[in-house]
Each structure stands twice: as structure tokens, then as C-alpha cells.
Amino acid sequence: MADNPLKSLDEYSRFVAELFDRFGVERSTVTVWGVSKYTGIAEGEIFLADEYRLRMREEIDFDEGIITSYGYEVYRSDERLYWYDDFPHPNDFSLASTHPHHKHIPPDIKHNRKPAPKISFSRPNLPNLLQEIEKLISRR
Image (tube, rainbow, N blue to C red; front, side, top):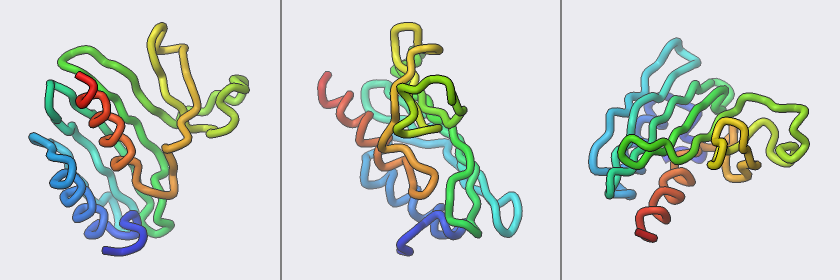
């Protein structure tokens, strides 16, 4: 596999499929497709044990090998537990260390944000997200 699977549609598609096998994903609706020769989208839901699921969308620039935009939401059954997004909040100085990456957490999930040091535009985020959910499952 390439050093950076974000460099091509084929590599990222293969990376996602192999990742889901490693993490024991129960099922997935995630699809990775090309929008143009240089860009693509990965979107869908990943279903894990104990009714956990990750809803995700990534826009990818294969020419640059980066994620240009994303949204990740984690649910247990129908309850949204938290989410990550890249919407900038330049006036929230507590998020400066990982700007624009941050995580929305309860209480007041819409306004309660914390830095997200493991989220990046320059490498795949799914491994860290799935590890985080695995920890939640193992604590149950």
C-alpha cells in the first residue's frame, strides 16, 4: 500500500476496505468515489458492535493527498454522542492548538468543543476514529 492512501482513489478505497476488516466492522454503507480525476468523496455509515456507528463524509484532493473537508458523527443507537468537524472557530482560543479541527461533546454538544489533536487533513482519520469507538465498546 502507498505511504499516503489519500493520493489516489484506488489506494484510498483499498485502505478503507482493509481498515474495516481490521476493526471488525459489522457492516458499512461507506462508498468512495471520484468526482474528477483529482478529487473524490468518501461517505456513509460504519456499523460496529453494541449499536455504535460512525457517520462520515470526507472530501479528498488526490492530487495533493489531503482531506479538504470532513464531518464525523458518532452514535450509539439513535443518540448522537459527539462529532468532529473542521468548521473554524477563530475566536475560541481553547481550540487554537488544533485549529480548525475540534470535537463537539456533551453537555451542550453544539457549543461545547475541545481540541482534536488526532484529526488531520494530511492523513486518514478513520483509524483513530475507529480506535476511539473501540475503546467505548470495550468499556461497556
